Length: 224
Image (cartoon, rainbow, N blue to C red; front, side, top):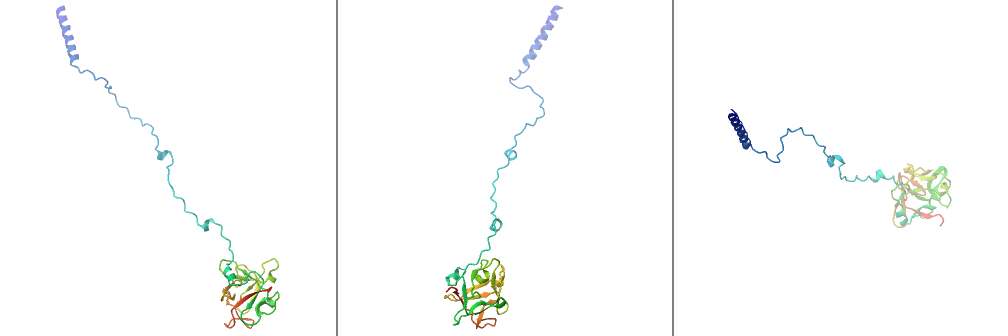
């Protein structure tokens, strides 16, 4: 009985050894199979475009116009340089004379501020002065008799009128009737005076509106 039992044990042991010999040996270094776990999102570094303001190249803004950025320039006064070259006396006491008529006929301030060319003697009423008019149009003047402009205040200016005679008025900035355009007439200092109602025409000392008379005038220094 012991012999049979031993033989059975020997057979069982031999079968076990045979099974172990036939089994494939494990591959060295192969990781044990694992059940994959859900991937955990790793923190990502924001890209340059989102972590910092993007570097952009901008064109400079168009320069503002001089009108928008600069203080409006002063109105200034008329350029009278051409008149000086023609020998017309400016800014001083003068007689405004009818040229080439052979007699003394000067602009004169008369009664009630009426202005004509009946002056024949040098007096306060015949002393005039041509001053640059406000604005930037060339050859424009105000006629300001010095005697009526000695005191403080707006002063007085000779103004054109729709009628024949002129008028002495309180100076008013920008009043067209008080602004005169001096039109050179030749190279001898002669000129025409163009007012709001046309060119002055003088006949026998009176300003006319009928188109007859003389238009050429000249300045004579009052102190001469």
